[in-house]
Length: 244
Image 1 (cartoon, helix red, strand yellow):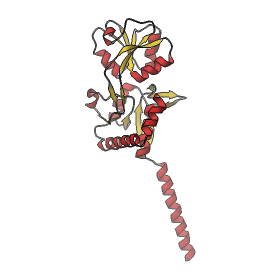
Image 2: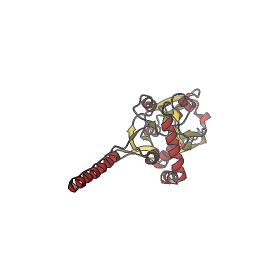
Image 3: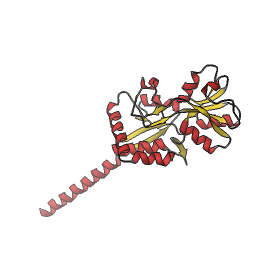
Image 4: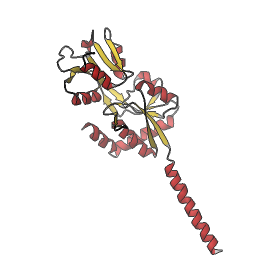
């Protein structure tokens, strides 16, 4: 009888370990939409999506106890993917504009940037956004720069699906300027000789994580996680890694 009891005890213990291991394996997933055309926030490296935003959302996932699954897609398809439940959140250097807030909710801001103008080094005609009048300007489809430039009069807008395509058009003389977010613009200028930034900058804008309107609890958890990684120094280390 004692042997039977001991055997049952061992079996129960083994089952507990099995359930524990299974639980670890079946960690809840958080599907994240991004557009890997926006270095240093998100870009491809050896076929893998990496960058500031990826480290940022992974740190949030760690706090929340969720496995992060990144889905790379076109920028203009991100919010539709969120609204149709193809992803749970969007992290893509996305500005929390008033227009976007009508469709989705945003987390607390995590980064501030400006719109800037990239020029060929020899271009001394364009110094500010007012000088773009009558010029051919490249923007990324759906990005804030697209919105800003599209609202300007007498500017011929050339839209591209990827930032590098707009940069190539500038280098080949097909456009007069590229309007892009500041950190990404700095990254391209640093890595491509013959390019420079114009003196003028657009107004500051805040990046935030987009969440469905119906996901109030998820938004609350994300904001709490952001607070935690800022308080414990994790966020500072991510900033240091990518921008200093």
